[in-house]
Structure formats: C-alpha cells, structure tokens
Image (cartoon, rainbow, N blue to C red; front, side, top):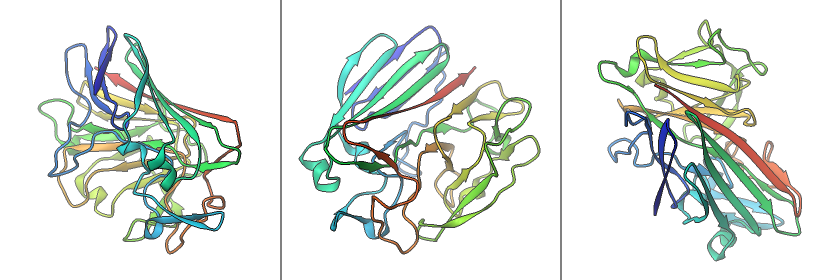
Length: 297
C-alpha cells in the first residue's frame, strides 16, 4: 500500500513494502526521486536493516550458530504496518516475526518515521530491543535521485558538494573504504575531494561499484552550477556515506546512501557481536537516528 504526506512545499509518497520512498515532488510537481527502471536499477530508496550491504558467503555467526541474510538485510522486503498517519507525517512499524527470526534471532521493534518540515523530509529510524540480550545491527538509507533534475542538463553537469556553501568542513580525515571485486571491505585509504569539497559526477566514477567515504561533512548537496533544482542530504549521526549508480552504465540517477556501518570484511564470515562498527543495543534499550532530504527548487 502507498501513502502520501504533503505540506505547502512537498508531496511525498511512501510504500509499506520496506517503508521506502516512492516519490518526492515539489509544489510544481517536479519529481526528484528516481522512479526505477529494470535496465539500470528497479529499486528507488530501500531502507537497510539489520545489515548494510553484503555478508561473506551470505552468512554470519552468533553465539555459535550460523545464520543467512540477503544483501542489505530484510526490511527492504518486509511489509510494514502504518502505525500512525497524519497529513504531513507517517510512522511505519515492523516487529520480529517467524521470517525475521530465522535470519536474525532477536525480538525487536523497528520504526521509520517520515515527517515534512517545510521543504525537508525528516527520516527517523528507531529500533527498540525487546529481547533479553544485546542486539547488534547496522542501519541506513539508499535513496536514488534523478540526474539530471531538469531539462537541458546532463549527468556530467552535476556535482556533490560537501558541507555548507562555503566548502567542506570535514568531520575528520576523509578516507575511502576500499572493496574487493566481490564488494567486501579490504581497508581504507586517504581520499581528497576537489577544491571546495566537491565530487564531480561522471558515469565512469562507479565502474568499480560504490564510492563509500568516512570523515566527510555531515551534509552533501546534489547540484549543477547552472541548474535551479538541487537535493541536500544531511546525516549527522551516520559514520559513512555511499555514492552509487549501476556500474558500467549511463544510469540517469545517483544514490546518496547514509550508513552507520560497513559490509563484511573480505574473506571473513563475521561473528556479529565482534564485527567492528555495528551498533550494540542492550536489552530493553532504544536507538534513534534522524537524517534529512532537503529539496531546493
């Protein structure tokens, strides 16, 4: 099922399958979200939980047992309940069930709240550990945006500008996460943005799959120098940012992906409780992470 929330600036549609965004339109009904195309990428904006990207051999271990999990976890394929609805706010909820327990042995409540604040979409993830043991997880978003955002521009006219309008202000040393050909983590290396904190877009940028960065500023703007429309994504609580489109293609979109953690390390079937960077949530505890998509029109 799909629900639309709106205010005087935006109309935003969300589907209950995976709680994912389906459409982001401004007051003139210009579409900003990628609308999916099997030739490039059928999805639009999956939510990632309880794991980010791939596991070595598609599995992990926990407390001496082995479990299997698909790429990006199970939320993207789960039907969520519309728990609360308002004109400009929607709360979706997923609780553990027989299917999730087979992959992830925890009792939990996972929520996604979408709320409109002028021309911004606030996305809030909440996880409540309803088990008697510590649960370990990763969480993140994977929204794709149309590029170009308006007629008369090309993909190569666009750039990602990190930080404020005056240029990037790093949260630390900017490093790129390196991946094996099978897309498992092999380490990190220093990474330099262009002057002004800019990453110019070109299709060949993604021929080795996603560019995943850490230490970057907590916001980035998808824009063209001679364009009017733009998208700003802010992710103050996320450690990593992925940028991606289908490798070896001229795909007319780019994904801007705020992540809390990373995929498995190359050649390691991870013990979930020991994998670096995962969130550890104690019994009965609650976790919340808010990020935003801002529309500039």
